[in-house]
Amino acid sequence: MKTEKELHIRFNAPLNPEDTETQTYGCRANNPDICGNCYIEGVCAFSSKDNVCRKPSSAWKRQYKKLKGDIL
Image 1 (cartoon, rainbow, N blue to C red):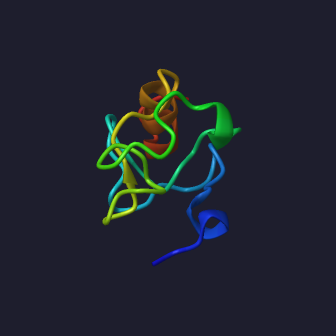
Image 2 (spheres, rainbow, N blue to C red):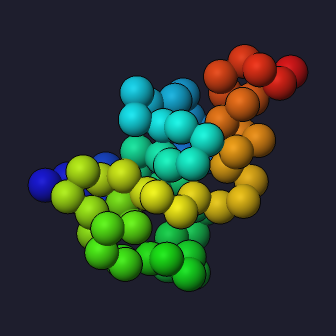
């Protein structure tokens, strides 16, 4: 199991293979403690067995496209 520090990934860090427009590997929130989905089983990266956040911020979709190279 990864530590919280290992799962807290910078918002502008390169994409991980598990990242999509609707989910992120690890948590990309600037402050995970104020995330409304923090520690919800099966939703939050910190409490999911696969370490995937299934409800990233609303800004993630645009950031994903930017990191993927679809938006300059």
